[in-house]
Length: 177
Image 1 (cartoon, rainbow, N blue to C red):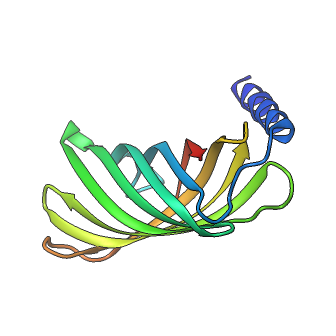
Image 2 (image 1 turned 60 degrees about the horizontal axis):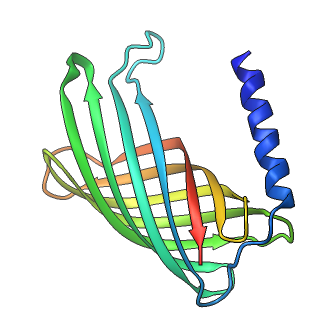
């Protein structure tokens, strides 16, 4: 039943997006957006024992340097709850680029890459977050943002080795003006 409701909601959003006016992705246009994410990490998939659960919010804003190509600035706050309910926070800031494909309708697939610096209780790290997604235009100024991102993280002032997170999904809203 839950799956059927999600499919119905997606079809409703898709049809609404197809009827909306087109987004302004021209040179000089600006964009601002936000998204929420939930990530579940398990070191041993066979036992489904959770290593950690992460909740986060992200805001970003930017401007289009040329048609379909934007420079972005990003801020992110995430909280991680591990086994035994030990909690930590992560503060992240970065900048990057977004390239959206204007295919003529109100569906805009895009790729983006954001380089970042992050602070966790154990120290600083830096890395890159490549993403792919789909903007569904709801009006000439608002779009829903569905995407999947990965994260390549390198420790700077904390112990440990480089890490790779693959395929964390997010949903958000993006404005164009």
